[in-house]
Image 1 (cartoon, rainbow, N blue to C red):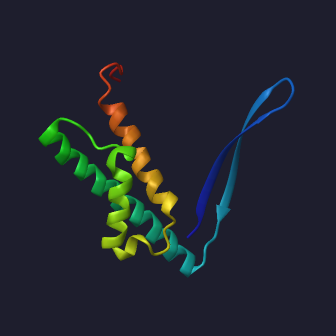
Image 2 (spheres, rainbow, N blue to C red):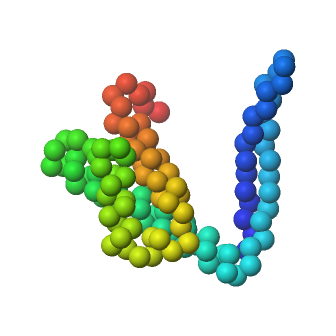
Amino acid sequence: MSLLLIIYATSINKYVKQYRRLNYRLYPNKEQEQMFAQVIGNVRYVWNHFLTVNIDEYKETKKFIYYKSGMSKQLTQLKKEKDFLSTYTAAHALQNSIMDLEKAIKASYNPNMNAG
């Protein structure tokens, strides 16, 4: 198995702002493949968990739970309850997952967004 890592970089010199795309192909060994799968699974689990929490909260109160108003504290509690979330997975990967979920919720419920 190989993984393609794509990085978009911006460099600014004195006159021109340049955008570059850097491609790297990774060839992980079996242990690293397992680690990547665990991290991806943990991030997906956290996303789905907090999506369900927000759907339930919205049904009850017509409000969402955002990162600073509760999801970060709930993530800490969830990591204590689910030991597998602490295995292999750095805290910032899980935090980024719920911050991305917050952005998605805000974007999908923004009445000023144009459809399409």
